[in-house]
Image 1 (tube, rainbow, N blue to C red):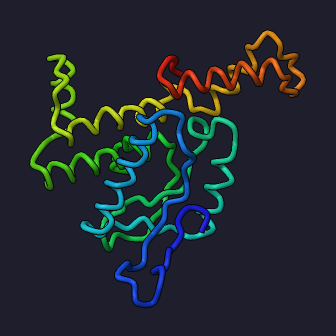
Image 2: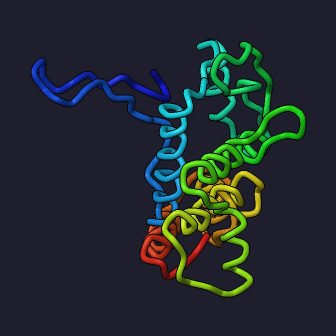
Length: 210
C-alpha cells in the first residue's frame, strides 16, 4: 500500500470502477518534471493493462526497496529488487538493479522500462520516438508530433537516473551546504531558508534551473 492503492468506486451505483492510485512521487517544482512523471506513469499503466505486464514482487522485497530508497542519494548508490522479466507468465525471478538499469536496461539481464515504452510506441503508434527525437535535435526542429515530444520529458528522468542532473533533494543539500550562512551544524538559519525559498520559487517560475 505504500506505493499503490486500490480506490473503490465512489458509490454502489457509480459507473466508475475500481482504480489503482500511484503514490510513489512527490510533486515536482517544474511543469516539465511533473509531465515527465505523469507521462511515464501513463505509459506504464497502458502497457500493464494492454500488454498484461507483470511487475509483481514479494511484499518483503517491496519493503526492502522502500528502506533503500529512503537513503541519501539512493537513486545513484542503491540497488532495488525488480522482476527479471515483466512479460506475462514470466517466471518469478527477481534481481537487484540500479535505477539507471531499471530505466535504461542491463544487457542480458533486464530490458529497461524506457525501452519497453519505445517498443510499445512502435507497435501502437508506428513510430520510433527515440529516433525521431534524435533526428529532431539534429535538425533543430521544434515542431514535433505529440508522441515524439514525450522524449523531451523522458530525458529529464534519463539524466536524473544517470546522475547527470541532481534530484531536488541533492540540489537542496548542495545549496544549503554551499550557503555562506550555513555553519555546518545541521541548523538551517533564517538567511539560508529565505534564500532557498527564493531559489525554489525562481526554479518553479523558470528563471533558474537545477
